[in-house]
Length: 119
Image 1 (cartoon, rainbow, N blue to C red):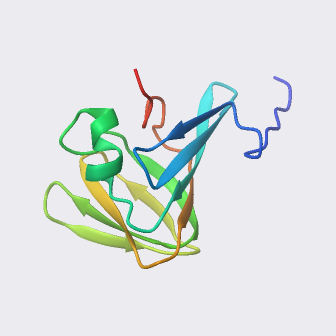
Image 2: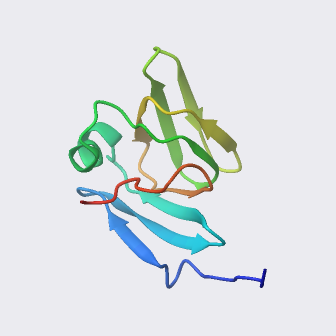
């Protein structure tokens, strides 16, 4: 298999949220890698739920937080906050929102196939 190198400055696809951010997506060797930029005030249930059409996020995420802070609310009632330098595994079944006035930038190597993808 050849080496594949891509750059988020020219992603294969950009998936804008319903306001307050976007996901840039690169396809590598049959896998999807995303860079999410979540602006202050972003909340999954307001900015992605209308795209997904589900009550909570049904994708799992495995990633690294480069900047900003995000609070995750699991369907079971548990919560976690993610900040710069944190690596994370978020199972399916959650809502999330940005904490503070700084954009949150995350790399996601998880189950991104159709995340925030419009039909």
